Length: 268
Image (cartoon, rainbow, N blue to C red; front, side):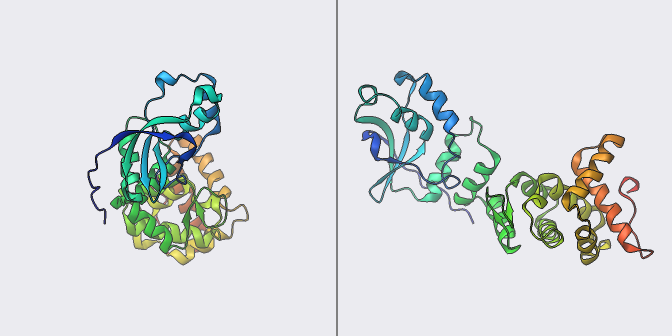
């Protein structure tokens, strides 16, 4: 459950540029981009620098907002950089409060979906926290690593959670994990949303064990489903999740071998 952020007053204080530390990405900060730092540094203008937002906690000056400007400033000659810089300073914010503050300050600026999601988890937002719990219960992780058991495409998780609900999201992740041995490419947005549509439409008509076996037998893995889906997209012009759903239904029916098949997707 999310705890409302405590209102805190900030002050403008001079801080040594060398003392500023950046929390790890996804806690209360976006992913670091060297290209963005280089672009700011190339056209550096101290008059447009503004105030980095800082949390002083446990003797450390944590950067909540402004990490790329701070790194760009560090690239300037010492005469330009100086020894201190004015910052907007809060004191003793928790990680949750830092995350809430970051999200509030960046409403008008684009933040990547992955970063917004992970920061929202730190902030204790109900939806993202519930999704994270489902992911962990499925013995998976939300992580940028392209490794077994890792999910990067959080947009699909959010959409299935919002439209089909937590129970279907749990079922989707369990099926994809078991069918494809938790391969990272199995959890792309189209696969997650497409399987969510299948479970939403057919519900208990689908035997999960049969579906896991049918999907797992394709030596091409998830790419086999995506290839079928692309053929459907070219023929019928529907969006990718719909076409993935149609491909999954075809694979499932082929595995039934005369047993009770479900209605084909386009006839549903």
